[in-house]
Length: 392
Ligand code: FDA
Image 1 (tube, protein in one colour):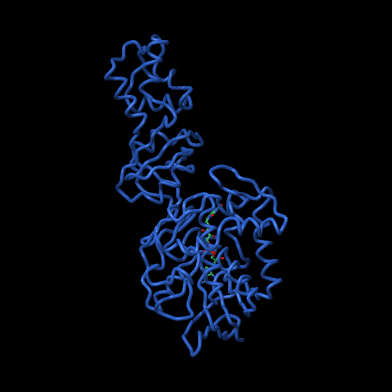
Image 2 (cartoon, rainbow, N blue to C red):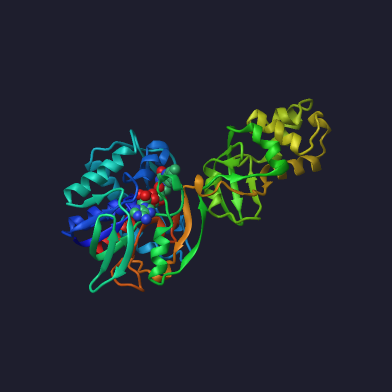
């Protein structure tokens, strides 16, 4: 079987690249080893797929080369994907911070990609594995569970390591190494952080409690909700900061990001001198959180009027810079993305083609480009796939 383009991986990037190349008249085969395509799309965005973000910008992406993503993002904008979604009659809404979600279901995005693939004559094979890839003149010879397949161009869209139960494998890295590529160290990103020992004991029974915070790590900060879990801390603010956190580093959490804590405490001491600290903190923090915060800071139950200015200053500092040292993350089991991957210095930023092996392309999460939470990762899948498809 001869194809112009063979794509390994039927996820977001692979399916998008497939129909874009198909529309250009290429004979395209998608090889997916799982029993169905687009599994991560189906589970994304709580079942509603946060498919792009109105504010896609290169500085919302992490990677060793922060400039790499610029060209592809400039050539495929959120408006283009929105137009596609609209053309398929999929209703959507902005949730917050430019994040666009389907009104109904992520299934609509998978169905849209499959419809486009069908119209572009793309062949999709699920439960299909690739045993061997060898260069040939021209292109590549693949041994697959379907039998031998020849490809003029080979696109690796096999994703990262996150959520192995959804079909994630390190195959893309293996293939990259086979052709002489380097892999930037991989780790789980957009992932809940875990606590251990005393901090875990102090907070875990508040599991399920959420509050707005600003989480900071080494100069990068995110303002959003933090969720206490039975293993540590999660919620959008913590997922975001997890991509910037390295083991051993201390996070600083601003528990009252919208208030001046010192002014708040001074006003409370003036207006309610007999009240206890945990009581006056309550409108600013959830009641149980405020109570636990006071316990962990060893702030005993005495009326506010007994606190000196220096005491209030220390408490305000602790509220604005609550120190947290995670002992790790929940890992690939629950991570939304994989940081690191195929080194982008060895790829063309305009075509995603290997500089080491002509005709070999890498797209989506397999490469060392990782977006923030909020639709940025799917947008990278679409934009990098389009860049490769235009060159195939
Ligand atoms: P993706 O993982 O989608 O696809 C790779 C495909 O390759 C899979 O189908 C896999 O089975 C297949 N494969 C792997 N090895 C293979 C092999 N050896 N042979 C053949 N096939 C192979 N992002 C976002 O922007 N908005 C959101 O709402 C969410 N939500 C979200 C929720 C959850 C729970 C997760 C885990 C992730 C998200 N993401 C997200 C991230 C987003 O899902 C991710 O960035 C994209 O799916 C990456 O697209 P790719 O096509 O690169 O990989």
